[in-house]
Amino acid sequence: MTADATTPPGLDFAVERPTLRRLERWLGLAVAVPASIAVLLEVGILLYGVIMRFVLNAPLVWGDELATIVFLWLAMLGSVLALWKGEHMRLTTIAVRLPPAWRAVADTLAVAAPCVFLALLIGPALDFVQDQSFVETPALGWPDSVRAAAVPTGCALMLLLCLLRLLRHRARHVLICLGALGAIAALLWLAQGPIVAMGNLNLLVFFVLLLGAGVLIGVPIAFAFGLATMAALLTTTTTPLAVLPGRMDEGMSSLILLAVPLFIMLGRLIEMTDMAKAMVAFLAALLGHVRGGLQYVLLGAMLLVSGISGAKTADMAAVAPVLFPEMRKRGLNDGEMVSLLAGAGAMAETIPPSLVLIAIGSVTGVSISALFTGGLLPGVVLAIGLAILARQRTGAEDMHGVKRASAATVLRSFVVAIPALALPVLIRTAVVEGVATATEVSTIGIAYAVLAGVLIYRKFDWRQVAPMLVETASLAGAILFIIGCANCMAWALTQSGFSHSLAATMAAVPGGAWGFLGISIVAFIVLGSVLEGIPAMVLFGPLLFPVAKALGVHEVHYAMVIILAMGIGLFAPPFGLGYYAACTIGRVNPDAAMLRIWPYLGVLLLGLLIVAAVPWISIGFLP
Image (cartoon, rainbow, N blue to C red; front, top):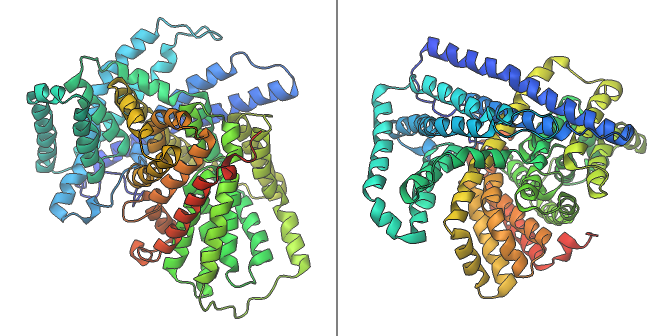
């Protein structure tokens, strides 16, 4: 997410050149078609596999293999769309506050830096394809280069898009940025000896100074990860860059991650079919008449909707537009509403099937079923704390004209909402009971949502299907590409020996397991503010989970603690990207809630400490 996700990076100060703008648009539309087809193929292949397995008892031997091939193409084409639409995660909080002249340079750098990364990656990516051509897929018998070719294809298309955008900038800004990047490269080359002599301390140069500067100035986070990793490999090792495409492939090709685009699509379906509105309407009929009732409805709706879409932005977009107009009529302050919405977003990070849970399971090997089971109660604990605070801060709420809904109205709204309320129960139960994997249940959920929209709610606009597929591919591409680049960075850190040093340092923290949990909370609040949730988890999860296990901290308990800590950082101003997403969705100026949000974050922190201190909250219901 960005503070302004609708403006592609690098275009705020671009010169209007209609021909180049049209070429960009044609390129984006040309990529949107195969990317949308890839989404449909993914859903079709996996749903067909589920039917063959559960209904006909004839599992497809080639199903997962073909799904993986399509998935890598979806990830790379989706990353091109994300670049075109400006949906690659980036931190704009500092860049937008720079003086216009400096901001124009930062805006250009947000395009020039990805250009350098992609240009350096294409050659190794082609070598990777050549190497994979000698590998044959076991079920289909295809050369693996069919799948691996997605990496250089996606990189080439993104490079072309970046070059078109770079040509729309003033020449002096482009020269300044290229000159700065060249100067950094020359400085690293000249200082290669002293940097290598620093040992593991040289990681601070690449993964603190260079990476931090890139992220803070507005370079998309995935590309900042990639450039920092390239710089470290080229300066301090003899490792060829050809390892990077393989690491990216490994990071993006996990079968668990197949659930990411499917849950994103499911979230869009529940919005389009009015299933989310049905749930909110039932909660409003039940609680809307009491003081603070709409705040309770918002929290309850976030708990329910989070169990369907798996993406916090989709959750907030499904709930806020329905409730905010009525909350304003009752005299609630805009800052309070957005603060509660942001707090609810952080609260719901552990509610399954959160994409962060899926990412953690993918990179650490922790059971998705166990994570889904353990994530429910911590979210409820935080929701109770937010509800108590919201009640106290309601103030003089204008309840004039608000009447208690009749029993008949409540019952009617409940009956209407039953198909929608059943969906999160279906998803969680199927995964927790081992009936289906997270990927399989997401396809079942999509089929269920389509049938419910067409047959029950009679709300299915076929004209929205194409934009929904493009949006699914774009958001999935942004998430998966950053996971791929973060996997490269995590590999580089591991090869340097940093992981062993980190494990030894954190294992020696005073207080044993409790001291380790305390440091982890602080670290992930900071990481959540700067890196966003999934990149932070992918980067540091594989390093820290073994330490937690060695200290006797249950993996599921540790996962809940760091996810909630990351959520607090993600929604904490001035750096938290989730905070600005909540303001954008609620159509509220970020300044309106900048001071009002802190009591909500304080309650979340208190709830997090309770969850950390009482492991049973996370693991009490595990088998």
